[in-house]
Length: 226
Image (cartoon, rainbow, N blue to C red; front, side):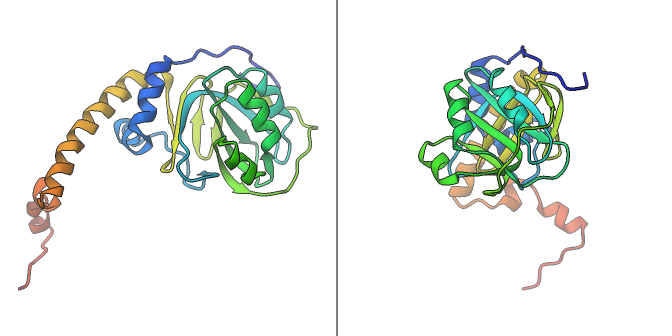
């Protein structure tokens, strides 16, 4: 689908699956997903400790123009995350306190935007999480048509409407809706394995032995000298 369109309805993943993926965390789910779907690390939360998950509602905007973000608000439902992409590089503050207030009234859990955010102090006070490219007081206009709920590329990751977004201090991850169950199963298995590894490390075992890395060092010609 292309052109200046607003798609009103989006198929969303099961809420319990989304919540379980959030609990597993971005780092674990990224590994479980085959190390795919991770946004560029310049997307950072406006305050430490922020975490969120939800179904993606997407907005494609012109740089410095947040018209289509306002259009996207109407399409958002409880538990969604608004994902904003721009047609070229932008650091302007395209989301601030007022838009966050409107989004929260719709039940939106967070915003992920490949551009700037403003009103960081107020967003922090209201505990509304935003993962953004930059912080900037530079204002925006509302004059350019874009699109809502079309596939977008945000911070180097393709996001389709209804995909699952997980975000925390480690970054932002996209999990395709069709893969959610498989990724969650792999994430749970990885978490169980890591519990055992954590216990062994705490007891003094070395990663060299837990991961059987000594033969690899020998094969590489690494020599130990007393």
